[in-house]
Length: 332
Image (cartoon, rainbow, N blue to C red; front, side, top):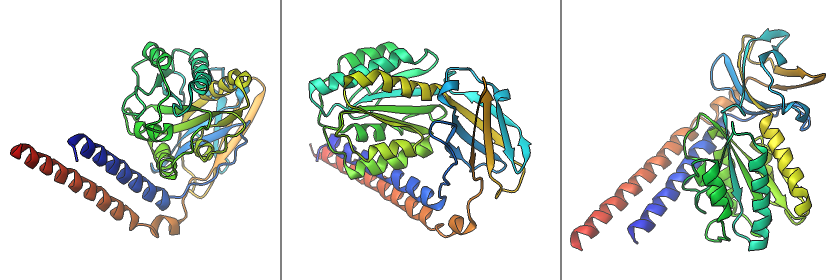
């Protein structure tokens, strides 16, 4: 086995170990469904881990997405008590958008995906960083809008890596303080690997990231659509090129309508927290549960040590491969 191949094996083991740890943490703290209309106010990326605080991302109704709302336009209640909240619009330097055309297609299909990608670039304001993957493996992102446009313009079909695996690899790249939205454009020409789907689903949420999908063609029926919706994103299907502009506009509207909400909670943790947005004669609300049942918090405590043990196995494998490489080099 060459050193390059060994390094690829170690990288895959490391990603699998990270997925195992995050999966255990997900199992230990089950998520609660939020009371939200897809066309109203949605609560996504909810973080309940800080005592006395609730961190979440709210997606406002489309009619308010292009308006710069302030904290005065949001009201938070818990058990009838108004709560103080910090409100930040993510479109104001708090959001990265990564465009990912599915390259495992023919050139005609790729051209359709690129058309949707370029439309999104033009729709999103300069305050939102727009990027794409520099290669088919998700090893790095482009450095800005101009390099992104150049990279998109030079893309050719590539079947050596799936778009899902490339996105999964990219989710581990910093920074983690900025919310990242991956927008996958696909014609569904290739079936996803169940392993890749499972890894992506596990990696997205803890890393403060979401997935949106624009599926081109009526034959698209892939698990990635449910992964996108579970991450707080949207999955849209268009029958032909005529629907690309409308789909890109809907995705950009939702991204522009994302706000980070940080709430200081005071009432008992069993009391739901309700967020209301009201502006321009539009009103919408959504609620989320703050507490986690005790039996779910304690019954799976053994999972975290098991995941840590898996990570140690990966580290030992990396060391063994390094030693083997050194021995081979000494005899060559």
